Image (cartoon, rainbow, N blue to C red; front, side, top):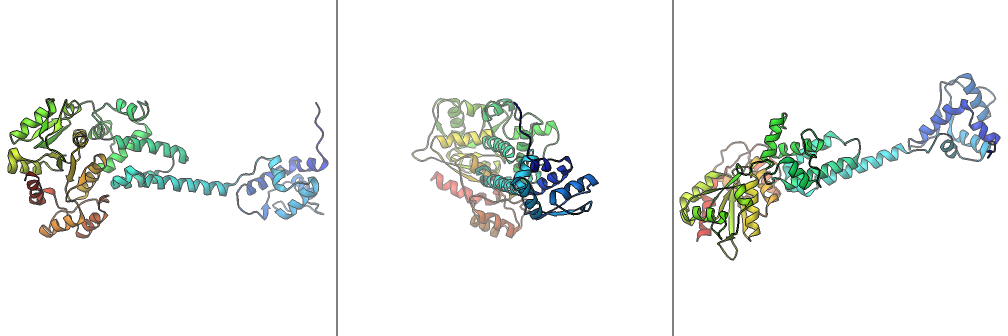
Length: 416
């Protein structure tokens, strides 16, 4: 099959000497910005002659000529009846829109970071806002908003499942990431992203060594050992013949605290809360508060759980078990930067409610003990944004022990 020869006008457009002209015009049109003229060159003599023939000039143009798009449109239309855009699309390829692409990419980036900032996990734990800022500063993965969102989605999925139940890292990864057991292996982008978030959350340095990374995972409950993770309780009277019910009941009746391991909580056996119809369980951050309660109330101590600072997997697991049994959970912690972050974490991971943790409670405590240490890095308290503002204003931390009398008075009311 033979192909017809191109028309004379088409042959003129396809002259090799005009190739640099069409490449330059294509590049300028692809900028996505208005184009009124294009500057060429340097052109050799053959190229200058070809340009003069195309434009119908009576003499050769300069070696670096400036050609108006209107004059070029006129010449191309006269030769072949097409526009310049149509001609360069045929001669060079589709005309792009770099300005439009940049606007679309900027819109995609804006939507990505808005989504991350407003994600439920980030809003529930405002300390992660610093992690969000670091993610934004690091930029897109492979210059792709889609790949970046996918990686961040996996990271948020992992963070939402922590602290976990003393699972080995590959087992945990497989469970929460659709069977991808190696997704959190040391050195993977997802592992680094999650560890950076945990370091921000716990207000510690980003781990640099393998040992530091293992320690940070263990702090979040990812470990092989379900005996070392334990939670202190007092006054926890449980009905039933399961091991959890018997251990906690014996200690409560003796007026003693109990240390419950994650192993016991994972296999609790049959149990039920002994208080009905609406049992209330209070939780505190510091063991000293639990010790004071046991000393004051003895066998009459109301149900009390202590997270001992950042709650481990045993503490979170127990609070969830109690909530599942119908308990109403109340939590109190230190009025300092870390205490607010711990409280936000507990309230996010369990159905607990803040117990005397409002700005009004803080101001009342500061009025009693105005001289205290600095509160440290402050982040928003999701349950009361005014609290962080009040702590910033006063610049004073109030540890839980300084309001122990107020907390014990509440517990006394629960005993009555």
